[in-house]
Image 1 (cartoon, rainbow, N blue to C red):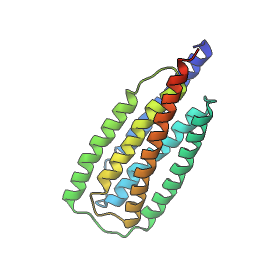
Image 2: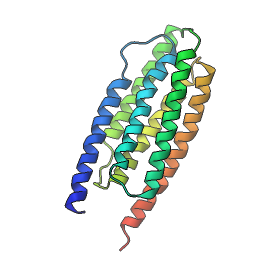
Image 3: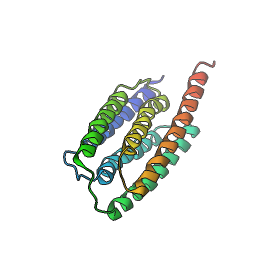
Image 4: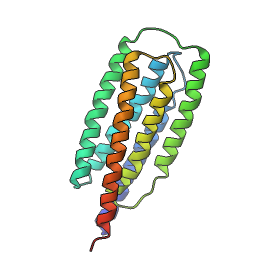
Length: 192
């Protein structure tokens, strides 16, 4: 690896850590609304915004076409889902979940977020920006899946239920694609 690649990797990782720090703080809300629909949206939007920033960070450094395409797709999907969540949040019916539901929801939610952030923070670093992005993004997607699965246990706005199911499908598909790209990158790294 040449010196310039190492410098770029350091800049890339510094920005990633900044994004992760901000996401982690914003996802740890301190007040609840007693409406799990609203609380989920308030927490998931920073998660989606972080994915957009992580992809934009990658796009500043990579020339690897498969990951450029993946990053652009993630950006588009996340922006659309943010817009959908904002519409649901603005128009959802004003009902309240019972205190036990809210407490159980957040107990599991905070464990999921803590595990996701720890896995992202401790993800393997290779000084290969392409691989580093994959190692960081897979636990990010896995966290979204687990947050949606947790959400679906409770009474919520039916539109959010539909969106959460779509997020689970899309994130699982993204993980498969990322793992295939990771395999290809690792395989090609050993060619002479």
